[in-house]
Image (cartoon, rainbow, N blue to C red):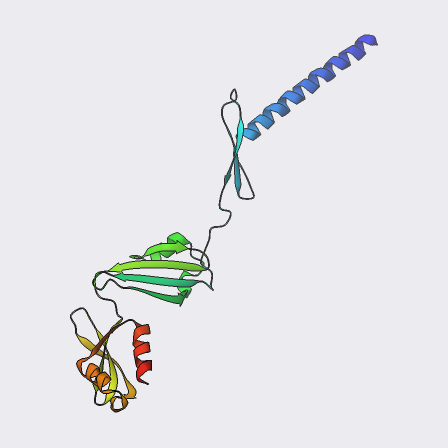
Length: 195
């Protein structure tokens, strides 16, 4: 009976050693593989004989995309006049839920200066003159606004209801020659002075 108990103890010890060895090998192999958990990649660096360190590398769990409430800011620099225009718009429906690469393809020829789900800034360089060059004149007794291009061609923008007969002599002379204005804000300020 003593021998049988001894045999049982040896078998139990061998079984425990075998079970521990298999479990240890399994855990080692498991730790060698890359695992992903909550957007963080965990991998072990080094060889089995080296000091092993765990490295945490953050990954994007969700790529940033354009929100329906996003704004787009378009900046254009014009080489000929040296002006930069900036316009802000609601984001077009076509690019809602697009990622940065898709937006870059959509705005081919533009630079993406910044990209977030709430705001995109794009810019472009043009060789010509910006579209904010104006000439204000007296035409048939009314203050009239023309746009000018790089060849000094004028195109009627609109005629105001401001009658030049109520303006000062100095202003009338300037309007007869044509007043060159750059920028919508400057144009608005000039017209307000005449009202």
